[in-house]
Image (tube, rainbow, N blue to C red; front, side, top):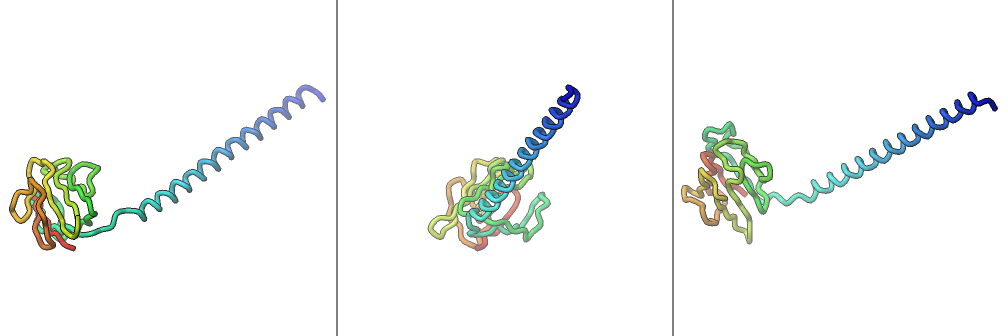
Amino acid sequence: MPLDVFLLILRILLLILLYLFLMQVVLTISRDLRRTAALGSEMNVRTPPVVGHLVVVDSGPSNLLPGTRFDLMPQTTIGRGPTNTIQLPYPFISAEHTRLWYRNGVWYVQDAGSVNGTFLNSKPAREPLPARPGDLIQIGPVSFKLTP
């Protein structure tokens, strides 16, 4: 067998091996993406239950519309930061402004050290205050009504 034919066969074999390797990489990546997507959908099923709502009563200088409804989890934080359960991206809301939690059938509201304060029925919520459905919670200049 002449040298030119031998080199041509080696090149073709190398090309075939390269394509087989690339195909294996693509199959592995697509399998991992499907598995990650399936895990992500399972995580959505495990989200904490919604145990109440906050409904905007007075939006103040924000562009929230009165009647806008936010779901409350058993442990809810409200603020401008990305780690909050409810994000309100307004300059008058602190990064973590307010904490609400539901324990033994009672809601508790507490300011998280914000600049503009948190109020429950016009009373400052520096310490945890029990709240009932129908109570007004003011977070900075925005007023919410607590609903079941």
